[in-house]
Amino acid sequence: RKYVQKNLDSKLFNKWSPEDKDFAETVCRNYDFAYLMNERLNMESNNKEIASKWNHSIRKCYKICKPLIKEYQASRDKNFWNHFDKLNILAESTNSNTENI
Image (cartoon, rainbow, N blue to C red; front, side, top):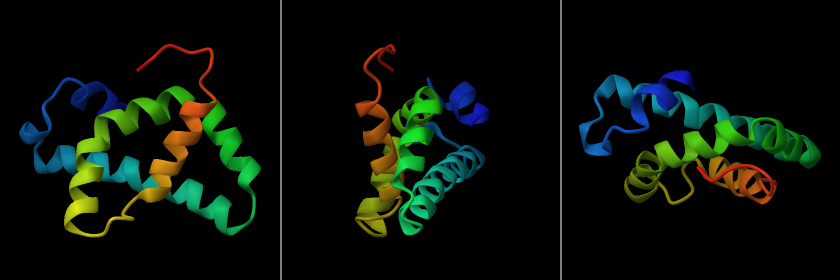
């Protein structure tokens, strides 16, 4: 997450290197998997906890990775990393007192 937040925040998506995409993919997979596992285990309250505790990181990484997510959803499957989408929506809904990203 640190690499993505530090190195890709101000870098245009069309300028991302293969290594940049690898780091972003790892972030997307990790957040997607965290949400998916809790959903599958019927532990939705854990997703709320994750969204609350990792709020800033989730929202910031999602904003940075969104072009990659949308590209993969268009070229691979519309539901690709959709659990990261859901986690971001949950993070945004629990974000009443923090700054906009």
